[in-house]
Length: 332
Ligand code: AVJ
Image (cartoon, rainbow, N blue to C red; front, side):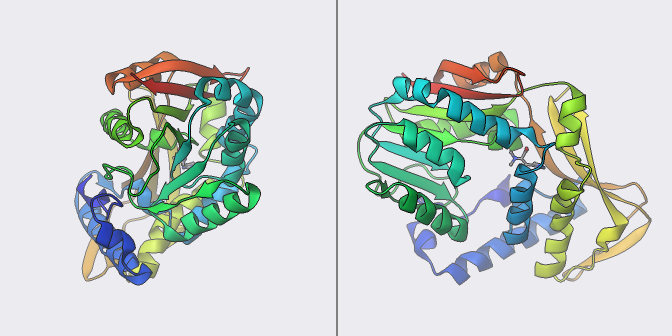
């Protein structure tokens, strides 16, 4: 994951406070590295985090509103239904630390359920989304101190200027599913450092389920997910002087039973050559670029992973159809 490293709030305070243009340049350089090395390797791959430029993030927002994409809808309903119960376990938390500035709707439901919360600390690599999310939340919850942090929470070891007191982490949307099991464990270990002794962590995790429900969520009839995936190639064209013909690649989502994950690929529909920066890449018909994994966990599977990262499972809430889970973890 070397190509995924970007300036962290804690370890590179200079980078974090650098002008926006400097950070964007660093991000483009990281994208160039990832694409050139990822297209040269077999199997070809580009890390999923590069799906989320401004266009990709807007398309992902569209995905979350699709009928077929149950995770957002069900997780929101779980927060609505179990917010008070969650609060009973974690009241006393002084600050809420959100990993990735998520949709303000989910965060607001949690904030409203928590009594005595003083500070909301969203962490995100994208300064734009962070600023937007921070503003929305500050408007909705007057009296709540909002202290956004720009940086890569996979890398950060401490929260700069974070207030003392009990912290509740929030990592929603099953974003943790993008990570391999080893990466997810490393993330949870890192989050334990960030949230500190007595800290708690609320994590949304997508459940294993029937393929009749799972597959359409990642390959909807309206083609929104396909557009989201293909934006990876469009972004290469925009930022890296690429000439991908996006009509000659197809979005493909399949479930890898052994790995317990959705895998997303872009499949070349013809034999073709593509230029990126000064390099040429030759694709055979049917050759694929792996762009994303979305791991699914049963409740006990995720609890075992959390325990291996020294988090104690406190409670897990699921919906009546067992589509999605909310896990509450605590540090000993
Ligand atoms: C943002 C990683 C949670 O895995 O469900 C949705 C990304 N990709 N459709 C997911 C995604 C295609 C999403 N996460």
